[in-house]
Image: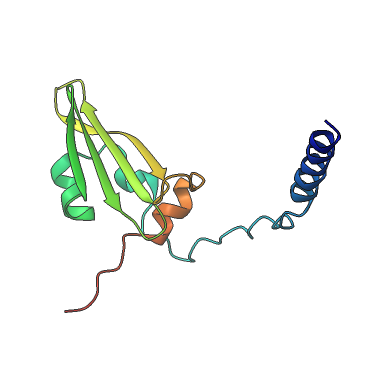
Length: 126
C-alpha cells in the first residue's frame, strides 16, 4: 500500500513539474502594415458581378453554387478572399459578402483591408 501511495505522490509531482516547464509565452506579432498603394479596396469588389470579378481578379481558386448564390475563393497574398454572390433586385448575381479567411485552418482571421491591400498571390514568371 505504501508503494502505491509513494508512486501516486511521485506521479503527481512529476505532472506538476511538467505543467510548469512549458515554453514562455510569445509576444503578439507586430501589426502588419498595408502597402502604400493598396492592390484592391473593398469598393473594387463589392457589388460586382461574376464577369467583372473574373476580369479584375482572374479565375477563382474555387467556385461552388450555394442555393441561389455562388461561393468564390481567391488566392490572395496574405489570405484567402471569400466572395459570395447573391441575386440583386434584378436577379443578377453580385458580390454581397466579401471576407478574408486564413490560408491555413486554425490561424487567426486576417484583416480584410490588409488582405485586399496586399493583393493576389504573385504568379511566377514563365
